[in-house]
Amino acid sequence: MRHHPIFAALYDRLLALCERAGFREARADLLSQAHGRVLEIGAGTGLNLSHYAADVTELVLLEPDRFMAARLRDRIAADSPLPESVTVVDEPAERLPFDDESFDCVVSTLVLCTVDDPEQTVAEAARVLRPGGKLLYLEHVRSTNERLARWQDRLDVPWGWFSGGCHPNRDIPAVLRASRLDVERLDHGEMPKELGPVIRPMIYGWSSRGGGLDDGTNRSTV
Image 1 (spheres, rainbow, N blue to C red):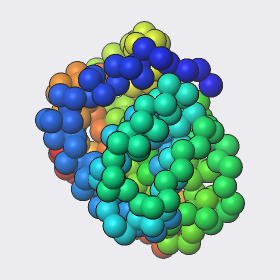
Image 2: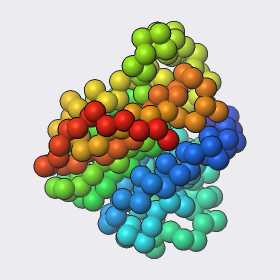
Image 3: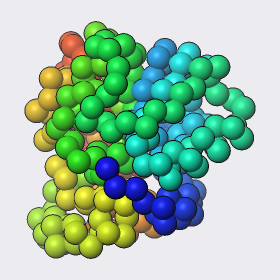
Image 4: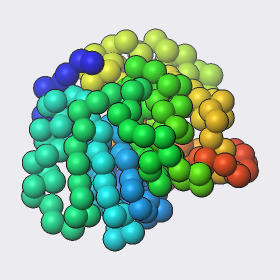
């Protein structure tokens, strides 16, 4: 695991325009479904914290980057409308230190682009979800436009240097459909233009453990 002190220090400022341009509302809409015992992987500096509602009884925040985790703990200390039980865990998403079927929801926002192994990360999320539990996701993904996808491939390495190990060209929808989870909703849209074209293609939705319908034809924008 690499740690990124400069990226952690700049993260909130880099996303500020994006948040004001609509991404904050997208987070709120997605996280309104979170309930019960919730695990958020790659919690970063805690930009999701204000969007968790009273239905969340326990919140476990996974953040392996120690510089991000330090800022996350500062935000928890400053924010009051949080579940009574909030824990920060410094472990990678590919090796979750939790029992099988121990969470009602797993949350992933702008995370699957940076993990070392997205397939294993989703497999671990599926393992810790209770039957009927959901993986909620809001991620930027590989473009379906071939020209832009080629640019994402060309810029993959330099983009990662700048952005804390982010990979702009990952086909996350394919990872989700290949997992043991059932894709219930997978909408394609666009990130706010303030983040630039390389990471603008995005997906929004959720997959469940058991009994879902893969209708991946839904289309929407944020």
